[in-house]
Length: 320
Figure 1 (spheres, rainbow, N blue to C red):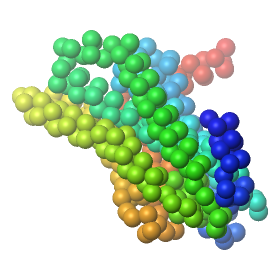
Figure 2: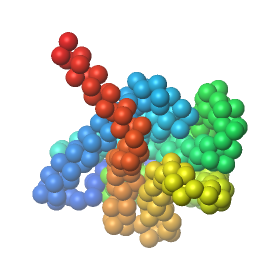
Figure 3: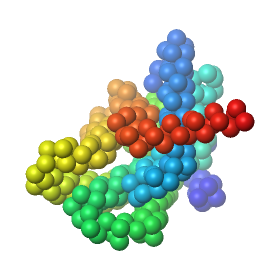
């Protein structure tokens, strides 16, 4: 992908070799506060998601489809924040805010791909919950290890193609005005605002592919939970209802946080984009990946047990 971008870069008529990532604020005092805030959030995100991955890997009780997809969701979130936050931290502590044209498009590619991958994994997890609650007798066959790997592979393929499509289309855009990006990373809408060429094809592709990658899975999740709620309401026992609802609560919370923050950023006309949208961007780019491990482990007894075993294993290894 990088070689393709470099070739396209050579043919880009804009003459732009780099952009300036100015971030949320240009005030030195604000940047100092933002640096420590983002560094803390990044470390919490990395530690939280790594612990989720390790706990699921080492505890055989968690070798189930739901936790298989949760581990991959944590890996995606880990990759996502590593794609954006380290460069942001460097910019906050440096006078040089530049990011190369190729570097910017590379960051854009991974950003777009990983957001799409997050979304597709969440949809797959909704299907897992649907089968577990509405078709429990078919769960073993409907969510077999082979099918789980197949679902995950499909998620990766679709997200890679989605990111590649929009990144290659971006290489056709001409930039001849300001190089200043008043954002914390190279984001699709912000780059399109800097363009001085016709971006109609980019907007058309965003609508067409975005509808397929985001709206279709979101509609699928709504339908799945409609059937889940219907099945749970038919359960006579109140304790059984609570148990069934509790297995879905974490997923619903993560989906709500994910789509809520995305809507804050993208459900508005391109020309209305302003600095205040950086706050919403921080929510979906930094806060959401940080909160996911807490949401999934807060009231999950299996995860508590797995994390406890993981810590005891580390302590025992140190003692011996």
